[in-house]
Length: 348
Image (cartoon, rainbow, N blue to C red; front, side):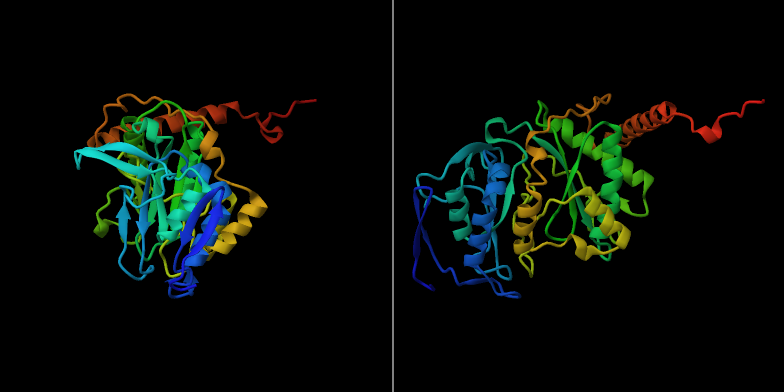
């Protein structure tokens, strides 16, 4: 099919697909046609996570080993049925027309552009200042890998549990692990960003041998960088179910906490590496493990000064978070029934 477009009809929309046999992953021979096929087949679960979120495309027209570029402003050469949303850009002093990948035809059209990676905003276009989730990107500094990220992720999960919050892990599809805390309730980045920074500093204070909250690369050797800064209106995080531009067609994959624990226990990073075909099989067997992120309504606890926090206030906020966690532990301990072995024996 090289050089000859293939016209297909998807949900009443006509698309011209080109260069389907072009190899985009030279190491494995994974082609553009296979990229399109993956996105078409994963669409039933992926579209709901992209719907109405401003989307940044990371395009690799020459393949994953060649130059790439980010595309925020939707190309003018697009079908009239591809929806966009104008979002004001302070840096450009104009509106940027972001693509809204709200349906299967749009997803296939983007894949045909060699948009291998999809990076949505944490917000909906209609309420760009209000994130739907809080996210932590756990990035290992070599020789650390995703196994060390699993340990940090488990610590984060415990902290969230003490605040009464559920969290959901996914692989980055690259080197690390990402933890999402769904909110789906009124909030702002002025709340989520300093809160995330506070927890990153808390982890750093308690586990200095493994955790760093500063993004300077020289500080990250053998440690896990807890990237709290992704909680920002102007940043994006790779989408769940997105392909990654690695040697192999790996995918940012939702996983169970049990799987995270198993990888940590076995010290086996390969347990959390999934390629496109494996992800399709997982979804068929497990469904969408990230579905609660779309609907679960949660609120962050109110910590004194959180809304006015600056990065320098992180330690103070971390202390407040730590205090709340310790109080929760004490309450849980006090609520436990005394075991029979600890009861005083009665004299007869």
